Image 1: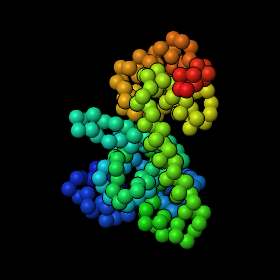
Image 2 (image 1 turned 180 degrees about the vertical axis):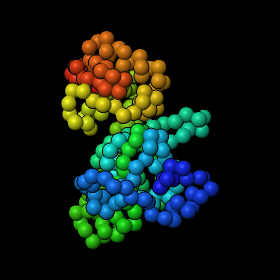
Image 3 (image 1 turned 30 degrees about the vertical axis):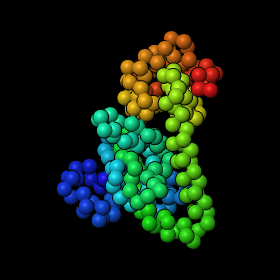
Length: 229
């Protein structure tokens, strides 16, 4: 559900959709197709941004923090589909309903834009239409790439994840992971014990160094890359 206030009760969900998001003051808006169109909102850690099977009325761009999308399986398990970092856009759907749920991984600020407004502008602005098309292609590629994870070993999955996060962050040797080990496990289709054990193996082999529980230094990218082939 679009959460204008984190304390909104389930029984008033329809009323929340009926009113626009509440804007908050922020710094410069992000670049891209949504930057000049949206209202920034703050979401506390683990707060729902939108829910599975709810109307896809808005698009979202992460300004700060991180957002995860996921689906709940019939047996109660959770499959994390993607992590969205600052600059990333989520909520892009081929249908009128969300296929996943989205939650703030940590305290986050997200730009919220009415989907109908974006589509109306795209009808008259070719550059915007091209950016939206590119965004759809990127999302499809992300899903296809993630589907390959399930045929890899635990070491290959974790190595690939670390390299993915490094490529999406500042490019420094050290990366700050906003997500928990459980988030990573649910993203990679592993148990949290396997993820923790694999991190330990990488530390012992000299491939990475754990500066804190969330800050990881990649000491041997070549070794990680060989695992990720």
